[in-house]
Length: 174
Image (cartoon, rainbow, N blue to C red; front, top):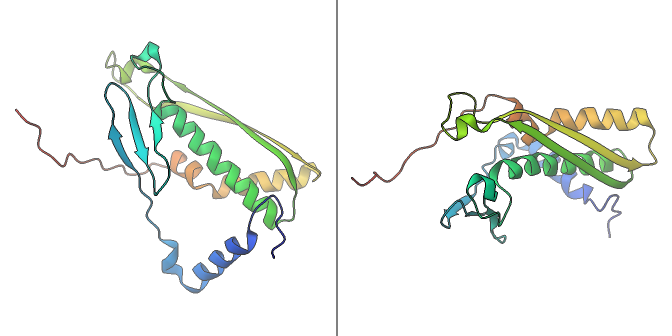
Protein backbone atom coordinates (compact mmCIF):
# COMPACT_ATOMS: atom_id res chain seq x y z
CA UNK A 1 0.00 0.00 0.00
CA UNK A 2 1.42 3.37 -0.95
CA UNK A 3 0.62 6.75 0.53
CA UNK A 4 -0.73 8.85 -2.35
CA UNK A 5 -0.72 12.63 -2.08
CA UNK A 6 -2.66 14.41 -4.86
CA UNK A 7 -3.53 10.95 -6.24
CA UNK A 8 0.05 10.70 -7.60
CA UNK A 9 2.09 7.51 -7.42
CA UNK A 10 5.27 9.34 -6.48
CA UNK A 11 7.07 6.03 -5.87
CA UNK A 12 6.66 5.17 -9.56
CA UNK A 13 8.00 8.60 -10.56
CA UNK A 14 10.93 8.26 -8.15
CA UNK A 15 11.60 4.76 -9.47
CA UNK A 16 11.77 6.06 -13.03
CA UNK A 17 14.08 8.92 -11.96
CA UNK A 18 16.32 6.40 -10.20
CA UNK A 19 16.39 4.15 -13.27
CA UNK A 20 17.34 7.09 -15.50
CA UNK A 21 20.07 8.11 -13.06
CA UNK A 22 21.53 4.59 -13.26
CA UNK A 23 20.89 4.20 -17.01
CA UNK A 24 21.00 7.66 -18.66
CA UNK A 25 20.24 6.29 -22.13
CA UNK A 26 16.78 5.31 -20.83
CA UNK A 27 15.92 9.02 -20.69
CA UNK A 28 15.83 9.25 -24.49
CA UNK A 29 12.28 8.36 -25.50
CA UNK A 30 10.16 8.60 -28.63
CA UNK A 31 6.45 9.43 -28.57
CA UNK A 32 4.08 9.11 -31.49
CA UNK A 33 0.59 9.69 -32.79
CA UNK A 34 -1.14 8.49 -35.95
CA UNK A 35 -3.62 10.84 -37.62
CA UNK A 36 -6.30 9.82 -40.13
CA UNK A 37 -8.30 12.32 -42.17
CA UNK A 38 -12.09 11.84 -41.93
CA UNK A 39 -13.20 14.25 -44.68
CA UNK A 40 -13.66 17.99 -44.64
CA UNK A 41 -11.56 19.40 -41.82
CA UNK A 42 -12.23 16.40 -39.57
CA UNK A 43 -9.45 14.06 -38.49
CA UNK A 44 -8.66 11.76 -35.62
CA UNK A 45 -5.42 11.08 -33.80
CA UNK A 46 -4.74 7.65 -32.36
CA UNK A 47 -2.26 7.57 -29.52
CA UNK A 48 -1.22 4.25 -28.03
CA UNK A 49 -4.38 2.22 -27.26
CA UNK A 50 -6.63 5.15 -26.34
CA UNK A 51 -9.84 6.21 -28.03
CA UNK A 52 -9.08 8.54 -30.94
CA UNK A 53 -8.78 12.28 -30.28
CA UNK A 54 -11.04 14.05 -32.74
CA UNK A 55 -10.26 17.32 -34.48
CA UNK A 56 -12.34 19.71 -36.60
CA UNK A 57 -12.58 23.41 -37.34
CA UNK A 58 -15.32 25.81 -36.26
CA UNK A 59 -18.05 26.53 -38.81
CA UNK A 60 -16.60 30.03 -39.36
CA UNK A 61 -13.36 28.41 -40.60
CA UNK A 62 -15.15 25.98 -42.92
CA UNK A 63 -15.46 23.03 -40.53
CA UNK A 64 -18.42 21.34 -38.93
CA UNK A 65 -17.42 22.15 -35.31
CA UNK A 66 -17.60 18.53 -34.13
CA UNK A 67 -14.39 18.72 -32.08
CA UNK A 68 -11.67 21.12 -30.93
CA UNK A 69 -9.35 22.37 -33.65
CA UNK A 70 -5.58 21.72 -33.66
CA UNK A 71 -4.59 25.07 -32.13
CA UNK A 72 -7.07 24.55 -29.30
CA UNK A 73 -5.58 21.10 -28.78
CA UNK A 74 -2.11 22.67 -28.66
CA UNK A 75 -3.27 24.97 -25.86
CA UNK A 76 -4.81 21.98 -24.09
CA UNK A 77 -1.57 20.00 -24.48
CA UNK A 78 0.35 22.79 -22.76
CA UNK A 79 -2.24 23.02 -19.99
CA UNK A 80 -2.26 19.25 -19.49
CA UNK A 81 1.53 19.16 -19.38
CA UNK A 82 1.60 21.93 -16.79
CA UNK A 83 -1.04 20.12 -14.71
CA UNK A 84 1.14 16.99 -14.68
CA UNK A 85 4.11 19.12 -13.64
CA UNK A 86 2.21 20.75 -10.77
CA UNK A 87 0.81 17.43 -9.53
CA UNK A 88 4.14 15.56 -9.69
CA UNK A 89 6.29 18.33 -8.23
CA UNK A 90 3.79 19.34 -5.55
CA UNK A 91 3.59 15.73 -4.46
CA UNK A 92 7.38 15.36 -4.39
CA UNK A 93 7.52 18.47 -2.18
CA UNK A 94 4.71 17.31 0.10
CA UNK A 95 2.30 20.03 -1.08
CA UNK A 96 -1.37 19.07 -1.09
CA UNK A 97 -3.39 20.48 -3.99
CA UNK A 98 -7.11 20.87 -3.35
CA UNK A 99 -7.89 22.22 -6.80
CA UNK A 100 -5.84 23.19 -9.86
CA UNK A 101 -7.16 25.08 -12.88
CA UNK A 102 -5.23 26.45 -15.83
CA UNK A 103 -6.76 28.87 -18.31
CA UNK A 104 -4.91 29.25 -21.62
CA UNK A 105 -5.44 31.44 -24.63
CA UNK A 106 -3.38 32.64 -27.54
CA UNK A 107 -3.47 35.14 -30.36
CA UNK A 108 -3.37 33.82 -33.91
CA UNK A 109 -3.60 35.87 -37.12
CA UNK A 110 -5.52 33.90 -39.78
CA UNK A 111 -4.12 35.83 -42.79
CA UNK A 112 -1.15 33.50 -43.35
CA UNK A 113 -3.13 30.33 -42.65
CA UNK A 114 -5.75 31.37 -45.20
CA UNK A 115 -3.13 32.43 -47.76
CA UNK A 116 -4.34 36.04 -47.73
CA UNK A 117 -0.93 37.44 -46.75
CA UNK A 118 2.49 35.99 -45.99
CA UNK A 119 3.61 35.83 -42.39
CA UNK A 120 3.65 33.73 -39.27
CA UNK A 121 0.80 31.18 -39.33
CA UNK A 122 1.12 30.17 -35.67
CA UNK A 123 0.36 31.72 -32.33
CA UNK A 124 1.95 35.12 -31.76
CA UNK A 125 1.80 34.53 -28.02
CA UNK A 126 0.22 32.16 -25.53
CA UNK A 127 -0.97 33.18 -22.07
CA UNK A 128 -1.78 30.91 -19.15
CA UNK A 129 -3.20 31.65 -15.73
CA UNK A 130 -2.73 29.01 -13.04
CA UNK A 131 -5.05 28.88 -10.04
CA UNK A 132 -3.90 26.53 -7.30
CA UNK A 133 -6.00 25.95 -4.19
CA UNK A 134 -3.58 24.72 -1.56
CA UNK A 135 -2.76 25.33 2.09
CA UNK A 136 0.87 25.96 1.09
CA UNK A 137 2.13 29.51 1.49
CA UNK A 138 2.65 31.86 -1.46
CA UNK A 139 6.46 31.51 -1.43
CA UNK A 140 6.21 27.71 -1.62
CA UNK A 141 3.71 27.89 -4.47
CA UNK A 142 5.88 30.39 -6.36
CA UNK A 143 8.89 28.05 -6.06
CA UNK A 144 6.72 25.19 -7.32
CA UNK A 145 5.49 27.36 -10.20
CA UNK A 146 9.04 28.31 -11.26
CA UNK A 147 10.13 24.67 -11.17
CA UNK A 148 7.15 23.50 -13.24
CA UNK A 149 7.86 26.15 -15.90
CA UNK A 150 11.54 25.13 -15.97
CA UNK A 151 10.71 21.46 -16.54
CA UNK A 152 7.61 21.37 -18.76
CA UNK A 153 8.33 19.36 -21.94
CA UNK A 154 5.48 20.96 -23.90
CA UNK A 155 6.34 24.42 -22.58
CA UNK A 156 9.97 23.98 -23.59
CA UNK A 157 8.96 22.67 -27.01
CA UNK A 158 6.75 25.69 -27.66
CA UNK A 159 9.40 28.17 -26.49
CA UNK A 160 12.27 26.60 -28.46
CA UNK A 161 13.01 26.49 -32.15
CA UNK A 162 12.43 22.78 -32.64
CA UNK A 163 13.17 21.26 -36.03
CA UNK A 164 10.01 19.92 -37.64
CA UNK A 165 10.56 17.60 -40.57
CA UNK A 166 7.39 16.71 -42.53
CA UNK A 167 7.93 14.46 -45.54
CA UNK A 168 5.50 13.39 -48.24
CA UNK A 169 5.86 9.61 -48.42
CA UNK A 170 3.61 8.93 -51.43
CA UNK A 171 4.07 10.77 -54.67
CA UNK A 172 1.14 12.95 -55.65
CA UNK A 173 -0.77 11.66 -58.65
CA UNK A 174 -0.89 13.80 -61.76
